[in-house]
Image (cartoon, rainbow, N blue to C red):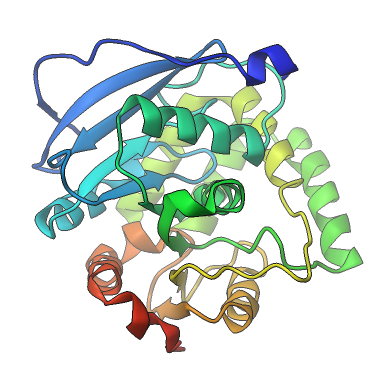
Length: 303
């Protein structure tokens, strides 16, 4: 992505007049789109504009539908929600050039601006979405109220030489595997619930091989070690008990130990997509966390 593209001013398309219910959530959402650097990014909002906002960013290969179980809980708790399809994903599949979490964080900022989202905003991200949320927080800390991360590693903690080699090798492995086989494997590795596995297979297939490989390349380069960095904002870190996608659990434990205002919870019976495998438990933790007075979040809870 060249400099001209990076600083292209987003142009919001007129929001559609009808409200629509998407993904079977039972909550009325409005669909929007905004042009950012030549890509039409799609997003959905629910809840009154005067409410505190939660912006939800999905994992690699998925799309906004992965948060279908979270929207009713958050809107019902009094929040405005914004969920979007990241560039190269879902309805925002258009895009050229490399994928980097820094570029995606700029896209998120453009989407929040187009939706006129009040700041500070709560950022909720699953896997890749957690890395994008971290990047946004690093760039614009004053705009973030809190961070909720599901099944993701810290972008700033140091990693070993072996971990870096494995990330590089995964780029080659993903290119070599037949994509249909890859989608089945990724779905089984990510979810315990059969319905969640079916959704992930469909989402991966719809996004296509080129988009996934472009995204994966960027995700393997997302770690930017910064030993002195600390997140001072309240954080809720969630990991599925059976998350077998890399070293997520141990990495999230180290992350929680580093940051003073973090909570770390392991969800029994859940995999990488804990919000789909055990939505009621994830929703309960999230709403309870967001309702806490900020001063009470300094005491970490390790399940």
